[in-house]
Image 1: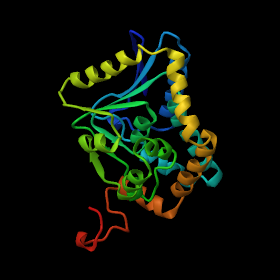
Image 2: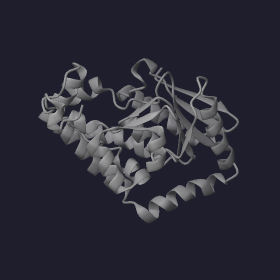
Image 3: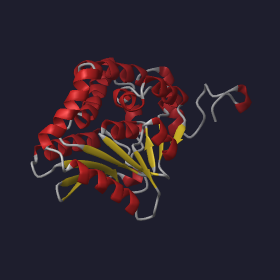
Length: 270
């Protein structure tokens, strides 16, 4: 079971449950995530969705072995896979219930996307965020609308192009996280911060809360279907490229990609 759901007092907590893989998602996990979101959205007793990760991390993004296995499937299959993946991020973003990401440990690539697709992001001060796709010859394609929505175009360009890890305090400054709390082993401060936001949200009318989400998207963003097609095309083309195949193979075999200079002083990224 890669997705678990717990319910208490109007709050459904959706747990990413591949702790041995740092909750990296593959096709099966994404399908289970979609079903879980639909189920929570249809349940009138569920007023709020909290997205959390089991184990040491929130989510390490897409399972690179799964991604690499699709690279040779051809343009049409890659595009269909990317659109399928992107649709789930859009489903989370457009959920009728308020959503809160509970982030500890690593949030990388698609993990940043899952958090950014939520309405609120709460993180411990030991969490870190990384959009390192460029170092694999990839781009943060279908997650880009949600990251740009959170941090703005200029900061998104820097995050996407540099691929650096961003600690939780810096993430709060740039907008990737709304709240940063001190880490404790039981994550009590994190849960308390999530509960505090949930308590305030429960004071709002359920339909009004959803209408607020629609209002913001309606006045500022393009049609979600158009965004999905554009971003899915971007990641599907990169995933099938020779450069991305080299980047993913280098990562999986624990060696530097061919474009990284042997001498770090030459300007390469360590």
